[in-house]
Amino acid sequence: MELLLQTLLNGLLMSGVYALVATGLALSLGVVGIVNFAHGEFLMMGAFLSYLFFALQGLDPLFSLGLAFLAAFLVGGLVYQGLIRPVLPAPELNQMLLTFGLSILLQNLALLLFGADTRVVAPSYQAATLTLGPFFLGAVPLGAFMLSLGLLFLLQVFLTRSRLGLAMRAVAQNRLAPGLLGIEADQVYLLAFGLAAALAGVAGVMLSVILYASPTVGFIFTLKSFAIVALAGLGNLKGVVPAALVLALAEALVSTYLPGGGGLVEAVFFLVLFLALVGRAWRSP
Amino acid sequence: MKLQVEALETGYGKAQVLFGVDLEVAEGELVALLGANGAGKTTLLHTLSGLLRPWRGRALWDGQDLSGLSPAQRARLGIGHVPEGRQLFPLMTVEENLRLGAAFLAPGRDGEGFARVYALFPRLAERRRQLAGTLSGGEQQMLAIGRALMGFPKILLVDEPSLGLAPRLAEEVLLALKRVAEEGVGVLLVEQNAALSLEVASRAYVMEHGRLVLQGPAHALLEDPSIREAYLSL
Image (cartoon, rainbow over all chains, first blue to last red; front, top):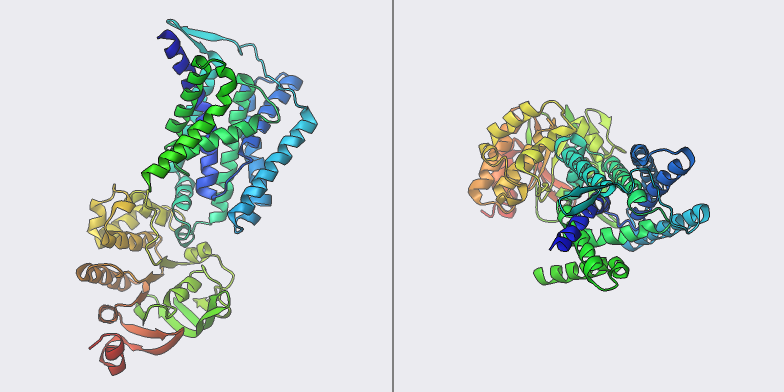
């Protein structure tokens, strides 16, 4: 029983970061309408940024969080202006090929610059744990979980309270009307894409401590995020958090209970994606 | 202020839809644009609000050429458009839809706008917390008009507001538009329901195959035998 609860607890803590990354993907999908296979690469950049500052300057990853947010927002904005915007009127396949190509390019750039090794950012508190009765909570995963939920809450406030947030939801729900209401859709797309990248960038800093930084760390999260977004319903932001929880819990259970589970964890999202798609097909014949 | 259309031609791809349309609407008047399905009425409205580029000819707003302005820029000049099919934000509440109407066109005037829209359509006030997608057809049409009014347009282009509505509701919506015009907004009303439109309009144009074939005061058109036969089936 204790093992089960500890497992669920681990899954719960991981779900925050998953939700953060997947929310970014859902934003670019729902608002901009682009299938961004390079989403995880923003995360990878955040992770390496955290690693570089830590290794070269001894900068605590806590400070890298803000820097990664800004840097990823900037890079996301540039990617939108330079690559995404010109391809928006093109067929979806062209868009997907572009983002897929960008993903491969960025991964190989990282490989060239940093090599294939996994790099961990290990501040003094990395292994700190809190004990809660019979359970152990990693301080870093707990902090990442709280921070992710905090950021998602702020995003929710932005989307419901602010003018630009409202515009962002509007663009996601209707393509024709926003222009007639004085909203320049293109600027909203730019903001949404930058924000999506920024969320991934912040998550990357967290993962540089919880997991590691490596050229391919982002792509795994792109795939996991797709599974989460498919489970939540394409473009449905509210469904992302519960869907992220489902994936994280499933992974935790597999890693604890399945013999050789550690190696199978990275396949769980395929199962989730498969079941989500089958479930959808059954529900809407 | 006046919206003037001069020798406007446009179409989609190679298919020409409008063949030289001249028309004008001034503030405070309700002008009906009648015509059968496919005559080019919606195409004209799309060209006026910048959703479609003109091939030749131009639209002038208060003497200023609108060519090259985006829909958002035209909206900021005071050209409101209630598009065909209402185009609401279905997952937002009535109030959020209305707030969006004001957010970028009349920031800070929400209070005034809400009062105006809820006075015009009291039913929307009752439904303010309801999701737009769950409203009835008539309520959705009211919301679409209300949302456009939240931006305090000087000219309002309204595309087939009576489409799919029960006769009583259609009349309610068109009478509301008449009140909007009486408050000083110019309304260009595109309709297939000629009888009802000519009741509320002061002037009207009739469009056939991308050309304006008739125009005049609404009461005169109501008496016109060709109109009575073709559009009023009398």
